[in-house]
Amino acid sequence: MRMRFGRPDISRYADRFDVPEAGRGPSVTFLGVSTLLIGDGTSAVMTDGFFSRPSLTAVGTRRIAPDHARIDAALTRAGVESLDAIVPVHTHFDHAMDTAVVAARTGARLVGGASASQIGRGGGLPEDRIVRAGSGERIACGAFTLTLVGSRHCPPDRYPGEITEPVVPPVRASAYRCGEAWSLLVEHAGGRTALVQGSAGFVPGALDGYAAEVVYLGVGQLGPRGADHVRAYWRETVEAVGARRVVLVHWDDFFRPLDRPLRALPYLGDDLDATMGVLDALSAEQGVPVRFPSPWRREDPWSGLR
Image (cartoon, rainbow, N blue to C red):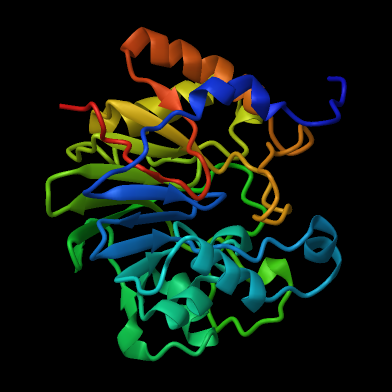
């Protein structure tokens, strides 16, 4: 197979960045990779909280640590002063490196598995702010109820295994092992539901019996897996929960600072165009629109859904 250089042109999908802007009620704000701010003006929860986005050179050659200036700038721009909870969808650096810092800044409880707990401890969070979740357990967080369901990371997992001791930055990227990977179901007191699938892996049948109107579907590393994997992934997430709208996350180049325009991951690591070819066919076949979120914008992914 001939090696392909460059990256997909995200402008090809410009017409898909049309999730309706939020008015009153619950909203979702996309903040890069699979970091999502989900709030209603009173309560708010966040996934991941990854804002430091160190360069590829830094990740490959040096120890890395949360960039407090970037974290503070992002929280300020997004209007985040407090959170009820923050949930890393797994504990690789591009998801969980900043989680403890964001929790400390916002008063959030850090919700996750054993590996996430070690990131919280390494970041100095007190034990009463660390919530160890079990698969299928419902956790009340303000106006939201969170259910974490055990899942899998999309292959290949470059840093597999659990984190077994507190992570105290700066550390090598490999210290952020995957840990537990989660499918996160979010239910608002007003009845709106969403599934956040931060990594393009799945456990067959794990989401059977759950329901969500909208899926925030992670597509990072999905392109090279082939059409059969993409279709199985859709079946075990979107179809399993009966979603009526899909919004794509984890497509952007997370080595690029968040204050610059987002761009797709390079072909050397992913192929968004190949993924979109399969997803567009599934979308047309099942009548489930596939959209991209606009960064920093409060959006209502439930708009128009009865």
